[in-house]
Image (cartoon, rainbow, N blue to C red; front, side, top):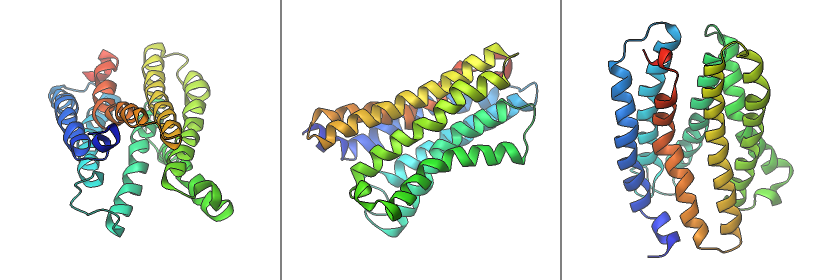
Length: 230
């Protein structure tokens, strides 16, 4: 089997990603359910961990090659778009809530704006410059490169300014941003290779998939400051 064949088969998604997600995300969700949060921020992190460990598994199953929604169906298209947005939203909800003293509508709007931005860019290009998004791989690449912009804004401007007096939380959340940025950079690198016809690039693409679907939630939970984990 070629690397492309493996990537596009059920062996990669859902099988590999669900198995790792159950192992890593499941362990994090179980740990979060057993910890007694000492404040609202810790309670938010515990609920976030449990919710998005489940969301990642649903994403794997519903958008994979053996999805019960079928392939190239309207339901599959809707699910793919929703899960792409929610997949980014999980990071921005974490950043918006834990870089502020309390949760409010402004924080929610801030998280939604950052997670929707790449999709809105793609929608605009489809109307204004359709030749740039003439195929799915170009769409992926442009999305991935665009997604790096709000990540840079958060990592280099918003978090350092807001968490100046909380160095441990600042390092942790900037680490989460760096995790996502590395994941998107790997996806973009793989897609450049795929557009150039390199079969090895399909294997490279598995790495950020594992990071995104199976590892991110567990990594966030395990690296959180001890005070937040209870």
